[in-house]
Length: 235
Image (cartoon, rainbow, N blue to C red; front, side, top):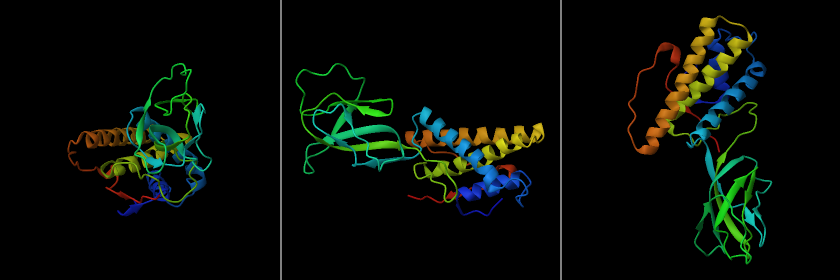
């Protein structure tokens, strides 16, 4: 395994290669492993999202609302929005932000109000009932990442105590899919899958406890689980 320190997506592929006994990249090249790693990384994100746990979140004031429109515009510059989590509105930059309630929209009022009040996420659109004024919008949203070709692993939204579990989920998950593709022994395939599922479970457990303010007990690591790591965070 690579030495303890700042870890990148490339490091995950290197560690997966070592698990597969192909440190020299005879067949487990970056080109072969990247599609598998992206598949696992997408699954990790989906698992966090399905449990309403923060994985990678950010905020933006780039969204806009035009008077009497039926949706809040997501500008083309925002390419990583997976799902809005919270929205606020205000009239001018000098005003305070007012929370917009997430709800299932009913029929629009015959007379449009001067605030938005409610919003609904439907088919990739932030839908609203018409409001009579243009509004400034603040959005907190869950991010999604495009296909990763190389470079640093973007895990800024994962609690630091869970990062090592997410990292090793990625490593073991990539090795698991690669072992299946090469028809390795059932014992090896099962071991990689068990470690992948265990690390996924550990990361969810850790984040859940962090959100609840419950201390997490540190446990030792078996030799085949890999050392504790610090993941390099990029913005």
